[in-house]
Image (cartoon, rainbow, N blue to C red; front, side, top):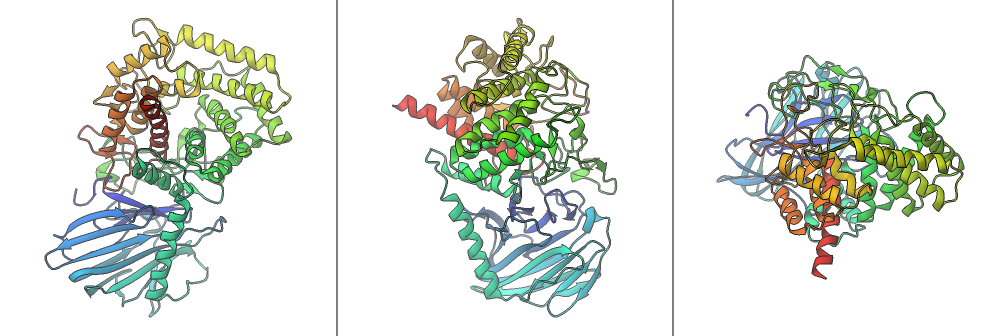
Length: 605
C-alpha cells in the first residue's frame, strides 16, 4: 500500500486533450501525452519503480493530507497539515480552448505555506513511452530539459532545481504566505521550448483556469437536489472529452484492475460508441448542447465512414480522432498495480461483435435532433443504408455489452438495442420525411420484440435474462424502460426488476451478472458495477419505487471518493476498483439524478 496508493486516493486534472491523476500525497502517478491514448510520461500507478512520477509535497511524511477541488472547477488542492505548518499544492492543466490538436501540454503546480513553516520536496522522474524510452537531462538556469527520442519534457520552476542522475530533485522552505510554482511541459522532441515563466504569470494562469471552469458550469440548467454531485460529474465528463473531436474516453487510465492481483486490467482510454451515445441525453438534460452536438457529429462521421462497406458498419470503440485501429499489447516490463498483471495497452475488444451499438448510435442521433443535429441528405443515406443492412443481420449471436471473452451468445440486451435502432430510425424518418424502407424496418423491429419476449423470458425467474435459453440475470437490461422497449411499470418489467433485486443487488449496489453462473472466459471475480447501480436507481424511479430509488442513489454517493469521483467498480471491502475515473459511471449518475428529481417532483406535487 505504501508503493501503490488506493485507486480512489486521487483527483483528476486535465486540459481537454489529456489528463493526469494526482494522489492525495501530492504525487502525479499517471499522465499520458499528447492525448489520452498516448504512451505514458508518468505511470508509477502501474509500476512504482519504473513508471515515473512527479512528486511535490512537504518533507514531513507524517502530515495529515486533505484533497479537494476548488468549488465548481478542475483546480485540485492537496493540503498538508502538521504541527510545524500547513501547506498546500494546487494542480491544474490550462484548457486548450482553441479546440485544435496539439503536442504541447503543461501541468502547473503551485505550492504555498498557509501557516507556520513548510519544507517542500520535489522529485520529477519522467519515464517516456511507458517507461521504454530512455532520456538525457540538460539542467539550465531556465529549465530542466528531459530529452527522449520522441518527446521532450521541460520542468520550469521559480526556485533552483538540482540534478539527481537523469532526474531532478529539489527542496524549498516556505514561510506563511509565501508561494512557489513549477510547470512541466511535454511536447514533441524538436519543438520550441516554452517561454520563461514567473510566479506572477503562473498565478494569473491559475485564476484563468478557475474562471474557465466556473464560466462553463454556469451554463448548466440543473437545479435539482444534488448539485454538488451532478456538477462534479459534469466537470469530470468534460475533462474526459477530447475537445478537438468531441469524443469522450471511457476513463483516463489503463491497466487498473477490476480485481487486485487479477487479469481484468483493460485500457479504457478510447471512445466507446455505447458510452458516448448515452452521454448525449445526459448532456442535453444539463443544457450542454454544444458538447452533445459535437459528439453526434463525430458519431455520424463514423457511420458514414463504412455506410456502404462490406462487413460491420460500426466498431464498438475508436480512438478519439476516429481511428478504428487499436491493437492490444501487454507491457510485460510493468509489474501492474499491486501486482495486477498483465498490463494491457490498446484493446483487443475493438474486433468484437456487439450488436447493441447500433441501437445506442441511433438513440444518440435521435436525441441529438433536439439541438439541430439533423443529418444532411448524405448522412441520412448512410444511416438508412446501415439500418437496411441491419434488417438482415441483427439475428446473430455476439459478445455482448460486457465484452466477455467466453464466446458468442444470443444476448438479450443486444437484441433490445437492435429494436431501439429500428424504432429510432423509424421516428427520424417520419419526423424529417426522409426516404426509408419503412415496411422493412417495421418488420424487423416487431420481429425483434416478439423474439425477445419469447426467447429472452425465463419462466422460472419470471424475468428477462442475460441470453436466450439461459437463467442468469444481467444488469444491462436496466436500460429497458429508459429506451422504451417495455413500459417502466408494466408487469413483465416489474417482475424482471424484482428478480434483479433478489440476485444482483447487494445493499443497493448492483453486480453486472454472476460470472460463476455465466462464465465470461476470464479468471477471477469482480465487484459491484457503479454504472449498474445508477441504472438501477433510474429504473426504480421510473417504476414508481421512488423511496427505494432515493435511498439507493444517496447510499451510492457515500462510495464516491473524497473529491466526488468514481472508478468502475466497488470492491467487497468498499474500495474503488478499475480504471479511474470512469465516464460511464458519471454520466449514469447524471441520468439517475435527473430521472429521480423528476419522479420526486411528481410525488411532492
